[in-house]
Image 1 (spheres, rainbow, N blue to C red):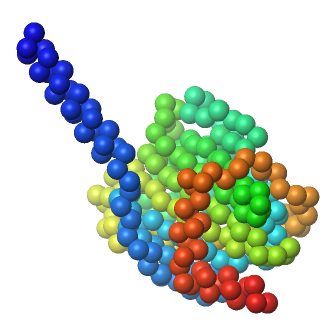
Image 2 (cartoon, rainbow, N blue to C red):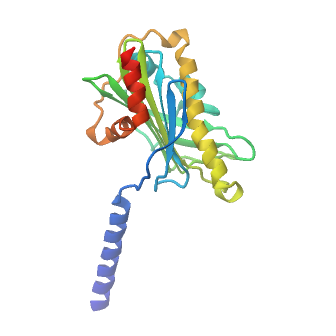
Image 3 (cartoon, rainbow, N blue to C red):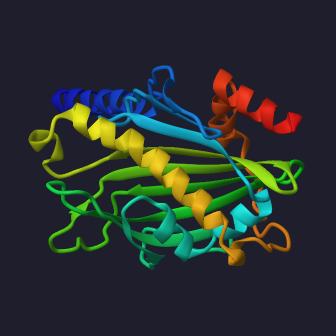
Length: 258
């Protein structure tokens, strides 16, 4: 009896310690600027949740916030905007429950040789700050029970945030933040600095793609926001953190001055 009670106490302590570790917040380093110009600035930073750098790209888009929010609700946009994207389409399964502001997705991401293509199932969640018209699109790809695709490496984790802040009727400030675990044997075959170089340029190339897509006529005539779900306060730190950066403040101030 005493032995069983001791084992039970040990297991309880292990469970408690594991829970504390799981609940420990991510440790992040400062954002480090790596690119600036053409009304856009790019950053990278260390994040304990991933082995590679986390990326952030912020810039001005010559389109209304409503237009961009509408655009980010089309599968065509993700296929054309995400750098080297091969598939972006709706999916169904136990990993996701769809709703008007939740899309269930399958994403197939291409990669230059010798890195293999990667895919994953996840959710696209849409939020709006109704007082300001600021919108958030949060993309999360995580482990689930969906069958793997032969010949494709399954992404164990990927998280992206698209944040859209209105400037005026014809311009908005767009934030694109991204981090991922690449999966597979990528870390053993390719030096991490090379992968990190690709990760930071992935953000800027993706941002340039959204600027290009915003010029298409079909994405210029929105009739109001589609999203209805309030942007929860616990997710506001994404934008609040980025807005503190001096280059972003300068970018926004220069835009408002015109």
